[in-house]
Image (cartoon, rainbow, N blue to C red):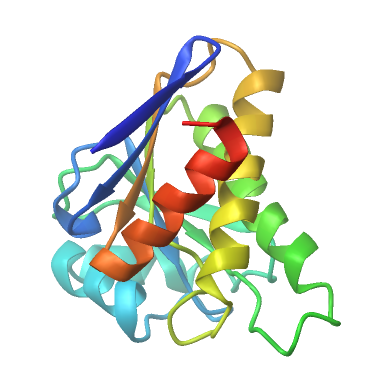
Length: 180
């Protein structure tokens, strides 16, 4: 696990299973229906149980770049923050600003609900095809910007990455961004 201090908060990178992460809130890389899907979305709905889907049905979906919150069902977290990242279409369709917004809105929703620790997957880099090198830089910048502008609001933000390849990409971006 790699960690850096940003103000009063810690930003950490690790390989792991987001559905087993003990954090106040975990972030789901959801689709706009919020009714479950593949990848991390399917894993969260599967591990969390039907309570998550029942709450999601009441939310009326979610726009790309936004985030909504539900309980976490049977997961070790208290909440699941569902965010819809962009589908990569070559970079000319506001994908970067939408992805940045997904991270920022997720952190805003976490703070609004009293979360002190948040765990993210790499949003949009799976089925949505966002290149991991670009996504990792945007994610780390969005998180660090939020932590700098909101000192003391969060204790820890962890990127829980599923594969060695994506973890390595985030570690490279962390080194580029923070000289670590």
